[in-house]
Length: 73
Image 1 (cartoon, one colour):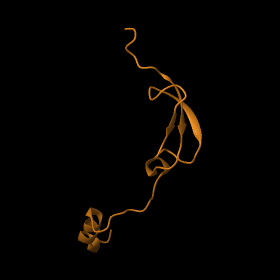
Image 2: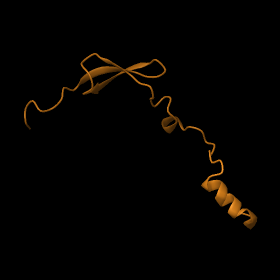
Image 3: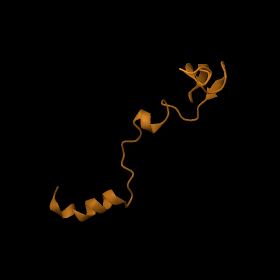
Image 4: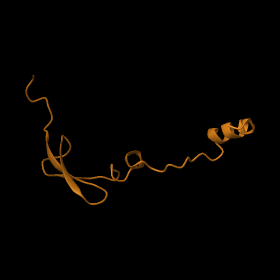
């Protein structure tokens, strides 16, 4: 492996949206810096399950249901 070509890998504090702080190893910033997140796994719908309601107002699902509504599925 070549010397001095890899970035510095160090520990930083990561502040979540709810205020909790965790420590992670990263190449971002400098040792001891604090990264403040706007979106994280505790608040984003992709990780929390989001809304189970289908948000299709007059879109493809509605057109499909209307087209086949008389077949009794």
